[in-house]
Image (cartoon, rainbow, N blue to C red):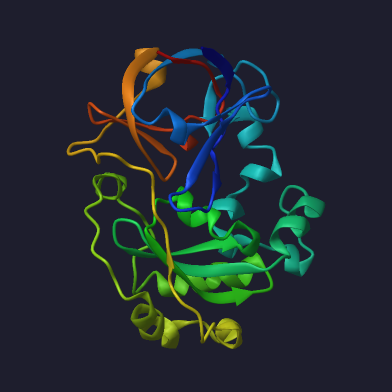
Length: 264
């Protein structure tokens, strides 16, 4: 059976193990049900997630024109400390910026390849942790807007990592950490503007991923270059498909590609 559609990040359900769904325009696949099966992925064309034109994808699923124009790709998306909606200052579209920036945000610690600090909207917990392949995570601060979360993250980056090593995450070479101890260790470095939002009493969230075998030497599939690939699916972690031959395919990094996906 063959399915065709534009790639967008997999939808997930926080169960044990986590359930993954690849959603196309008129179909969806529960990817957990494909574990142990051989699938074939064929590149068809590009489709920008904004204008829907067949133009090369630049970043985040958008063509170059859209990336530098639409509010969904503005700098404050990746750097929340640049948010200005709380000051009534527009970057690209103040209505959109208020909608996204002026809602509760979480500063968290997650252990994917190492302990890292991150920011997400409260409504995206635990989805954000799943997408990063974290096997444990904890909220440390809940603030009313994106700016406060951003300046808190910037302050804490001097004392804890803010990036995930994707190879280490996929190989599952992860050491369990006591995130409650990390939270207390970092508490003194939270900016004064956010200190009142520190979360005193909560527990770690543990996440279980559907992986039959972790890759020893993960190699990333470049579908644009290879045009197609076939392999046995043996795991799902973060936004990655893990195959038996150690090939891994990051769905999130390939948003905006139209593919044929066949189950062999």
